[in-house]
Every structure is written in C-alpha cells, then in structure tokens.
Image (cartoon, rainbow, N blue to C red):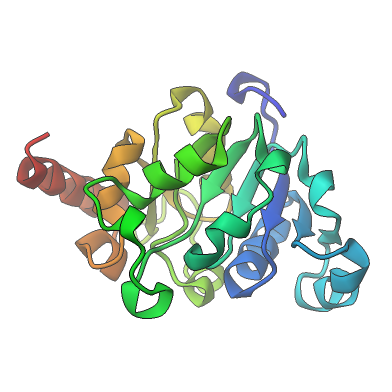
Length: 222
C-alpha cells in the first residue's frame, strides 16, 4: 500500500466480489490503467475463465492475494456482508459499495438504527480504513458516464470516511475513472448518499453534489 503523497498514476486495485458491480468497477479500473485483482470466496481457478472473459486485463486471485493492494473494493450483496473474510482486509483501505434495501435484503435490525450502513460495516470489518463511495452510481452507468477532467458535464461521485489520510488516494482513484470526487466528510455523512436520497437517486455535477450535501447537513442539523 502507498501513502497519498507517494501515489503515481497506476494503483493496484483489489475487488472482492465478481458480480455486476465488482466486474464493472474492475473493467473501469483496467481502462484507467490500474492493476486489477479480482477475488471471491472461491479459489482463483474457479473464476479465472469468467474473469478473463468479463474483465479482460484483470487477474483472478485467491482472496488472500488481495492483501497489499492500494485499495480493496468490497462489492458483495449487503445481506451477505457477514460472510466476508475480514482477515484479508485488516490494515487495508477499503471501499464499501454496498447498499441496504429491505425489500431485497430483508429487514436487518443493525441497519434500521440511526447509524449509516457503512458505520455498521466498518465496525464489523475491524481494522480497516473504510470509505463509502461507488454505491450511488449504477454498474452500467459507471462504464458509460465517465468524462475527462474539466468537462462541465462530468459526473460527481461522493465519498465519506473517518480516515482523512486515505481520502486523497480514493479521490485519485475516482478521478482516474472519469469522475469528480466530492468529499462528504466523516463516515456518518454517508447517510447522504444512501438508498432513497437525492444523491443516490440522481446524476449530479460536483457543484450540485456539494449543494445537496449542504442541504443534507442543514436538514440533519450537523
């Protein structure tokens, strides 16, 4: 792993999950010039062929081989989060792409409290530097809605974390994939981009996303 000050253009991105979200992130990361490793709970040989076909340029690995990646993107259905092997994530910068939706996930009491979903996830995962992002863009949109820096139509992706030391790293990753990174603040602010919010439900530029975040703060009294 590297500190933000030591970053160069290319990162090593681990993706835990080979579903639609994980493979879309993997493809976009490959296009951005990053080294991409994809793992699931199964041995690498089980997903090698499908990875070669669906995410050309990425490498299928055993989940233990994700250790040491600059960023690990967790892209599994939220209702399966307790099946995640947390050991491979310890000490890592982790992006949480998961969303809670009771009609799909079922009622999960831990996500019915006032905490953001990612606060619950970070507590479960342990010694990780969790960043909430990539959850409020459709997996299909991620690959077609990117724009170069400076384009007035460039879409924003919001991120939230309690770990300021990794925000530049994640912002660099978001930017490299063709999106403006907008810092929402601490992980609790991830509520502003959860299912049902204006940020979650729409497409916004950086200026629009910042205005919606300010609106959320005023409504939440923070």
